[in-house]
Length: 52
Image 1 (cartoon, rainbow, N blue to C red):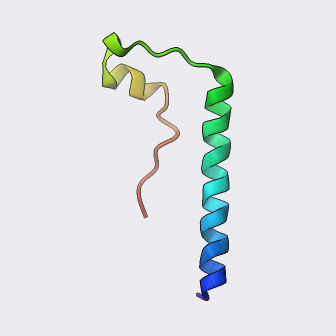
Image 2: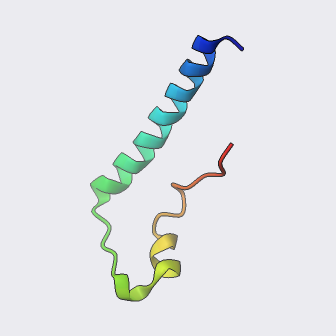
């Protein structure tokens, strides 16, 4: 894979991630720090992905 092809692939991945994060930000989801990580993490479960 050429350098520019790798760059384009990374840019596409970043754009997909940004769309997901932007959508969640628009939803203005409330989190309560007293609920703990497990409860709040579930609200954003579709954002984190495995690191390649």
